[in-house]
Length: 135
Length: 268
Length: 53
Image: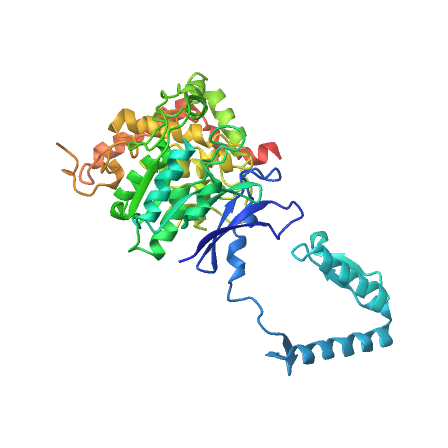
């Protein structure tokens, strides 16, 4: 049997509260706020308390989905990426780069956010980059 | 004190009496709950004292319940202070843990912690290490009792209005184990309302703490708004003591007056 | 607990009346209503949350 408490940082907002994920036999079953962290001192908001729930959630995407004939169907990564690249190119040529907008998230890492804005600015040539917290 | 605990746990693990010991460990610069399964892990054991005594306590009984549910046939050891021990006794009466599968290793709390907690019994029944401190003076409840009615009302309402409904108080509480929590029932507590309806929300929780709260103080420590929940639940406990002669978990096997179906049970 | 939280305990009454004792029940209600009228509006009538907003 394997029970461990894994120190991690909350993925939700920029606060960066520390807690331990309670992992029993490889599955995250609970959240324990970290009392010794200077950021949150053992306290969490409701989102932080429930971080462990989305990890194993059934609703998480496991495969890329592509809309074919009005219905979302499973596709391969190559198919999904080719489709996205082709369509973005098409829209950029037809309606101009500023007709495309990019929305990123507080739940991804700083590095991923950097890549997305670089793609938006350097590849697609638009400044239309914003963040979910501004919604 | 910590060396005697380490020795005791080492012995229990080596003889195979317990499958694991639920305690606290120093790792990654923090104090974390930890299930010790090998002797070498004991080197970094902590008793929950980071800067001052007892400032990094965790509801170990709660995690023990999770583990015990998954492995009901195994015996586990657990680090207990006075409050944890009372919690264990109460959890046994509520059938949440099997006393035959739990081995409590008791430590006492120093006097300054007992005073800060205003603890009625800062030591467990079976002590592995440490000397008993005296019960702390009950100042926080007395301070509220000293106010007039209208002052009390505005005091509590000003505190309750800070609530952000994080459910931290019940998530951290070692005695909260209901699968369907009435505070999460949409008919009783409307979702999307912040703060929740006060004082109803906090009073509902206080009522559910009747015969359950062991006065560990983790709720108040987990509240991001710093609401003096402990004082509220201490009052609940003192009313139970006064009217029903009942202090949660103090007497082995004693069930809460609200946990009785047979009216003759518990009467001598 | 009501008293501890600053709510007059006179506002809560527990009486044991049988459904066969109709006149007694009416009496209980009437006297309690009078007592409550004398106590005045309850402090909980105002939504404290809106007061601070």
